[in-house]
Amino acid sequence: MKSFFGRLVKKKTQPLVKQSDVNTVPLSDQQIQDVVTQEPRIEPSQLLTGSSQSVGKQRDHNEDCLLTFTMTVGGDKHNYPLGLFIVADGMGGHQYGEVASSTAVRTIAGYMLKRFHPYITNSAETLDEPLQDLMRTAINEAHRAVTQAASGSGTTVTVALIVGQQMTIGHVGDSRAYALRSGGRIDALTRDHSLVKRLEELGQISSEEAAAHPQRNVLYRALGQGDVLEPDIFTSPFPQPGYLFLCSDGLWSVVSDDDICHIINEAPSLQTACQNLVAAANQAGGPDNISAILVQLIS
Image (cartoon, rainbow, N blue to C red):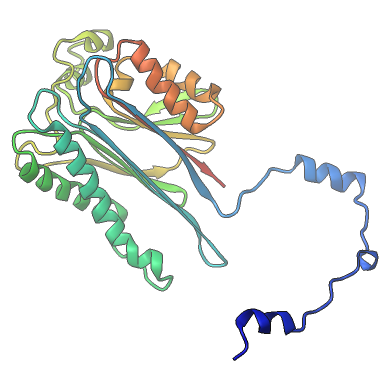
């Protein structure tokens, strides 16, 4: 029997086209100008991300947990990015805070990716469950898992599920999601579930008083706490041009919104931006664990 390589050598191939047979036509000045000035388009659309984390300067272990997952599908019929991003902050001062945050992140990611698996592997499949319902079920599953795995503890969780141009946010606690938009504008997408924030919303204290309040870290809503959980869930377009930014309170409580914008806009990459943000939080004293995720949609 002839070897595979022997058959390959004897197989006839088509001759290459001679360079002299290839004709080129010079572009006009207008055509060149159109190429230079036209808005570049990336196909397929895709998500770029960076992340960074630190135990901080005043804690001896890390109770934060984060997850980033991205996937791109490109083709004639399908052209969309899929991304899942999670930040969870185990409740400081409680037993098994790191267990609570890790359990929440892994439970949510496992549930969502399992639901998306048939849709990813088979183009004929459709995801019938509304994304907000999917998010709510995943967070409630995590709530039950945290209650069992770390009884008496708890965790915040902020989740961003991105499908195409839309993002669905699920949120419990005081980790945050921000939208950074063109012109240096930053908008908080989530609302802190803290007692002090509630007092501020009711007009009983000012934002300055809230920032220095001794009970600013006390939460009235967290995974693993209470029998019934009511997560905040909403869907909105991904900020374009702009970024989605997720972080724990170890970052936003010591780095101002203006500094967050400046650091992100000045960084050469998303990963460097996250590292610089964490460094800024540590430079400000690093009183808590620090987590940061930055996402950009390129299309």
